[in-house]
Image 1: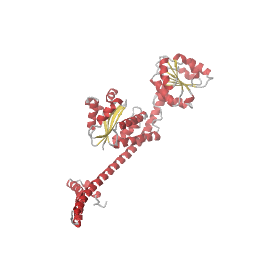
Image 2: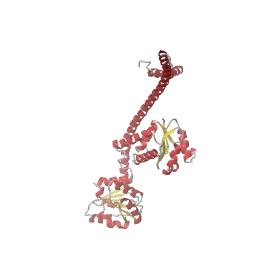
Image 3: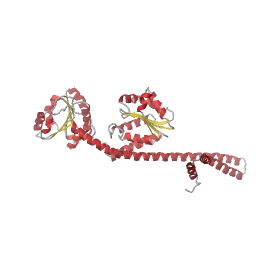
Image 4: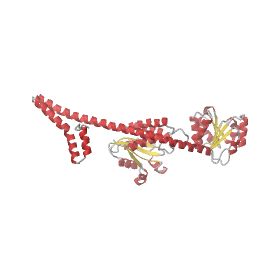
Length: 418
């Protein structure tokens, strides 16, 4: 049963086109119902994220053109606008592609772990829509174990490659436990929200959010059990803070050297970590000159990110080797299943012949025919029926001068010693 992948992603299509071929959760009922009706489709799964839309299909015969036609028709697109951005993989290439996707090797951010959760989610959706079965189902289960092995045996996902994650990792390296650290987040935009999520996931619980408008700060703070305040409250609160991470759109610094000096005196010079990921900067660079104040800027984080990305690329080489090995193992399993199925079919076919001829022989005996004559006739007919197809195969191979094929058939029938 052929395996097929057809799709587009961030490497082949702009977001405007990816939006047009995306499948919303509300559309999945209709999508799976109509996809399952495409001729020759046995099993299918739809993977649709902001960066890719891919159709994974197991079919009874070649049907890539029919799948593309279905995709174009379902989204009411013009074939000429979609076709240049589509890619198609079959068999071992399809298997390798799925494993690479699940391992984060085909992601916009190399090694990102979110895609594995997304693949698991759409796998569940396909099961719920009775669309997934057979070899494709086995492949998905194998893929999950491959992704787990990659995460266990490589460090591809352990290094920070986003500013928000790098800021959180820096704080984790400097402070023994984020649970015991008091954290002030300045700003309430997307970057600070990501920082808050990473910190919260890493055990940070003593957080406060300061923003120009306290209402905006409160909206973010409520998501993480944090305290909200306005920017004007920072001078009175800074003495209680161990970590400050700032990212606003302010054109002027929000935290100055004098403000930090006052806070350090009140803290009796207990060290403070400042991470400024704003451009322009939110924290005066002179803060770095103060004893017990440690200031990192977005440039410092970028150098960490660049180093970590190189480490991910190195780990990706190891991950690719694992995927190659596991793909070969899955293909070997598939080939063994083909042999098992062929043996089963051959045995069933031979048994059908036996049952048919035996029934005729028993009927002849019951009608009073000579047992010796019945046995001779049974043996002759059984032999002729069983050797009919192999004989035709030998003749065809010889007549067409397919001598390699002829040799294989002879070896299969036990006609050659080797």
